[in-house]
Length: 480
Image (cartoon, rainbow, N blue to C red; front, side, top):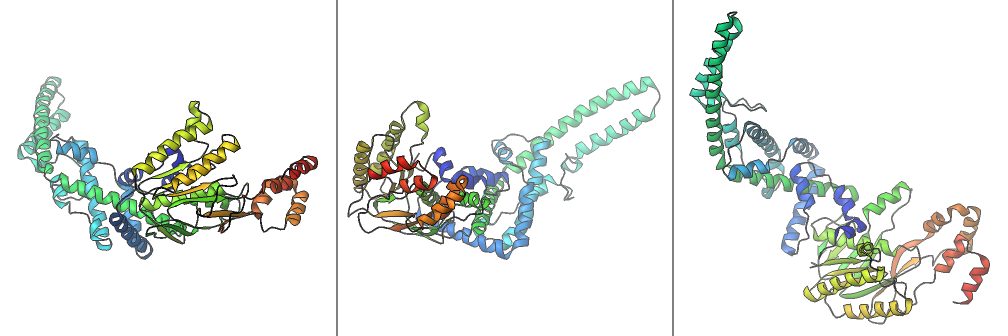
């Protein structure tokens, strides 16, 4: 897939967000299941315009929005009924009932939404459909093959009612048997006439099926856009600008944010600027490099799908593919080594690079599944290879010697600025909570590095804080 497979969508937090996107109607739910990235900047800007408008309406017209949502809850999916009608099928009584009820709900929504939403979201008038299905203009949410549809049907039912009255009033068994036989004949006539009426109603409705399908599509877009607007309001998401580079200021990941909230912790927002070519990301162990890649990839694909981004400010280009590679990929379960699985995924990525003019690739510790000497060569080679294309890439690595003067380099601040001795004393007093204490003091922000610094050697610091054997620590320290 050009835009992340299901495994990677789950990994970066996209599935979490779509699962928590509060569409209400069956039509909105369908739209949610079929979200696709948009490659037209004009279409994307129009979707952002609509979302901006809906956010304002959610804030300014709360009562009207609440009423619309209550009606959305009552809707059932009548798409197949309408499509069958278009194909010439005669609807049965239950299908006519569903059509009537949902048309009435559409009209209730229309009475509110057409007054507050943009013209593109205006529902068409379904009065003619309701008139066909409600010949007595009773405006009640029921349906029956009413007598108003046919004088002949009315006469048959009148005759049937008279005979039924006689059946219940007579005590003559022979007369009862005769009357019941006569009633059976009348019921056959009634069923036959009802079938003719249903056929006639279906024929009359066929010319209005396009109107129903238009309204179904409008409802789908209203429900889905409302859900996106509420998501943006909940997290303070913002409209991205469409440009030629990738830039996020104050970027965050909602799934991880919610996880940290439970622990009474905060997500440390991230700033990053990427230009065409490859960017290297280095940092301490436990420094959150994987979180940075997931958060960046999540916000890029969300923007391309017409969502506001989880960032205070963002500029995004139109991307023809988005790929994410880490060593816990699915092909490992098929018997491949982790490195073999990475190479299979890499074939897909290089194919995208050669086929499409602009895309995005995130590589999380690529080639750490092979020996370090060869792994370093693969990472360095891939970094140089990506520079030949007009795409964006960010590569998290723990290998030294990958960065050169032409390669942008970000580094996780990590434990660089902490008072090491003070933190060690805290951990010694509460050794069972060593990992949470380290995480609490870890600086997960990233900074642009303007010289070819080596990858931080925080592994020994982390090991020391957790409580590695002193003799072992000294041996390892002498090897640095």
